[in-house]
Amino acid sequence: MYEGPYSDAPCEEAIKTVLADRQGVPWLRVKLKPFLDRVGILGYEALRQQVVGNTPIQREVLEAIAAELGVHPAYFREYRAMEISGALSRVSGETAIGVYQMLMAEGEKPERQSADSPRRGK
Image 1 (cartoon, rainbow, N blue to C red):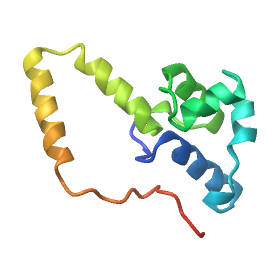
Image 2 (cartoon, rainbow, N blue to C red):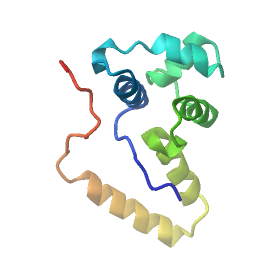
Image 3 (cartoon, rainbow, N blue to C red):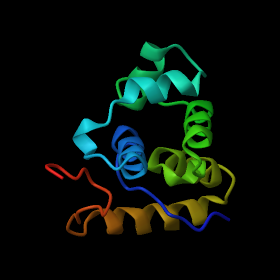
Image 4 (cartoon, rainbow, N blue to C red):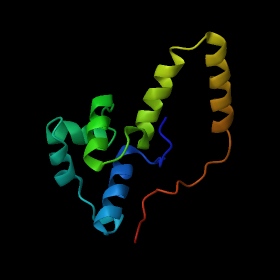
């Protein structure tokens, strides 16, 4: 099982966070196009639409992005959501209900700022 690190940010922000750290530039100066062109799984625009959340992101896309970044696919919250959904489809109804109730209770807690949220102005 993958032990982390994990990103709580949406896919686009998570990618930019890794790239900004590696390039030593502010988050806002990171351009996605050169990176997405290197991923090569889809055309740039189709890939961009998935990364920015305009269309549902595919598992294969997240895996290709993770490979290009050199991180585990589970780094991305979207991938973890896919894994959770798949796991829930394989468990008993009672277990699924318990997990649902736990997640809903967690969602009622006050929101916290993610450690990897965009570093504006840095």
